[in-house]
Length: 265
Length: 262
Image 1 (cartoon, rainbow over the protein chains, first blue to last red):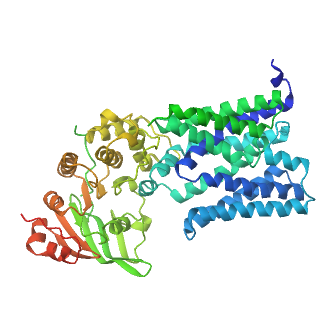
Image 2 (cartoon, rainbow over the protein chains, first blue to last red; image 1 turned 180 degrees about the vertical axis):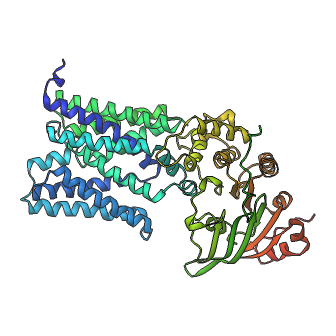
Image 3 (cartoon, chains in turn brown, yellow; image 1 turned 120 degrees about the horizontal axis):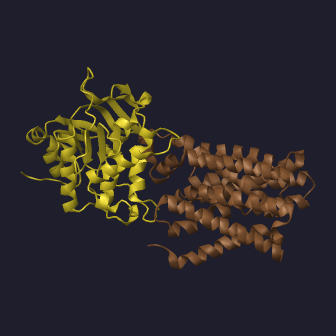
């Protein structure tokens, strides 16, 4: 058995990484095509406030992040549906608001601590057995929701108005997508770090969009690019003692750059 | 193009043959009335053309008819049900105005047509072989079966428009609503397109509503004509629209003079 698989923490990290590698790009393809990439970044900053809240009051930080990110997701959708603000302006308010709240809560809990850094930038040693169950459970929920509503998600991504005329519950599904992004951020933050999860949602999806001929193929390519990035990045992190989140995201950006000559016209 | 089996005949068994009824419909945008007191009845088997100058409220009228916009006053009835409670969307097909296809959108022609099955299949259910066969038949109906695996963004505007008609036809709607379907489509493709609509209406019994600003073509094809300029100026036989002077009144105030003398 190669050394990388011999450690319990590494096995957990790889399992978590594989789950992240599948769900982040699967949801990312829908986000990028609807020009909502910034939602991922916004919700990761909102989730950071949840991590800080969890650390302050003694909850599991992932549950704190989940609770706050879900509240943020509902708030973002409500602002978007009302349409009173320009789409991106609503996101900017939540993004900076989340970060501001996080900073205040971190200050209240006595400043930056080591475990907070692990959430900010990810760490392969950080996935405890309890984390793994949260990650696998939430990840399966995201995968199940995407599989269950695949045809509706395609319909609203391709042509929202035509989907509405078919009786597709467009507003409910928009909320669902934003909630799935919130959950994906929470699932990803342990390994990749809360500040880098949006990259894993967006970058493999953009790479796949250069190559895919059909929608199904594009999602498959995005998952493949993301799984490769996760495995290569974590292997590099293990043997070269690099920061895992950074190594994973840099790998996925390298794949994006390498895909340029292959881009279909 | 092949004929695609039996089409569900519009519900002539119902006591009232009206497919859709707009009753005193007005629509306001920020205090400006863009539709004013429109009363219009669409019967089973009609091929209704709605014409009017730019900004006359044609698209708004369709969006109100489809329940995408709530009317400020008046009511909309589809297949005998108030639009707010209407759920039988599989009976309605909609081809939006020149759908903006992002050329890089990664969807095959077949995937786009399949997406028209959402209403029939039900929420959270997967497409089965029946849906795939229906999509294949719809593509054959519009003569696009040969390109089913091409990416939608690589087709010409005319071809894309036929794919969107196939998407609207896939669940065999009794009412097909088309908004400016020939904008950006070349003349040859337009002729094929009107031949297809003609066949859908006469042979398959579909009720059609077509919005256009191209009055010369529309007046030749449709069985009923509605002239709209915020309010309904005329509704009736297309020949009568010309003889009664309704067309003249419709475009008199329009800055762009459109006259086709026959």
